[in-house]
Image (cartoon, rainbow, N blue to C red; front, side, top):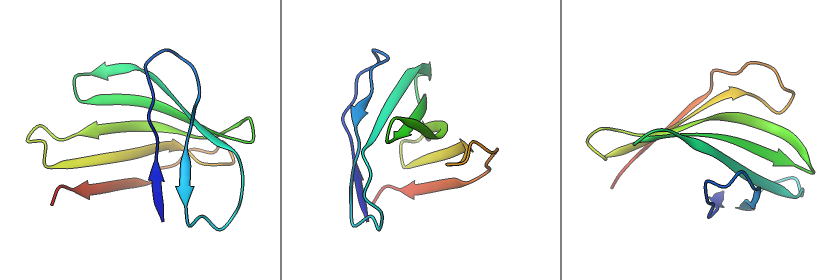
Length: 87
């Protein structure tokens, strides 16, 4: 599965494309204001409803990116963390 998006910090929702997703829905991502120089809060919308919230953070050394979900698609608290290492 491949996910891609391009967004600005203007409070608007931007299309969020997922290739290889099992379910078809219209998804968009709304980035909030940056938390700091390496951290951004976000909200993912699916069919107009909040599907997830969380933060994206780049490591100090720039060699990894982590995405921490604070809520899941049912609006319940989540502790899922995805970590991507630069290759």
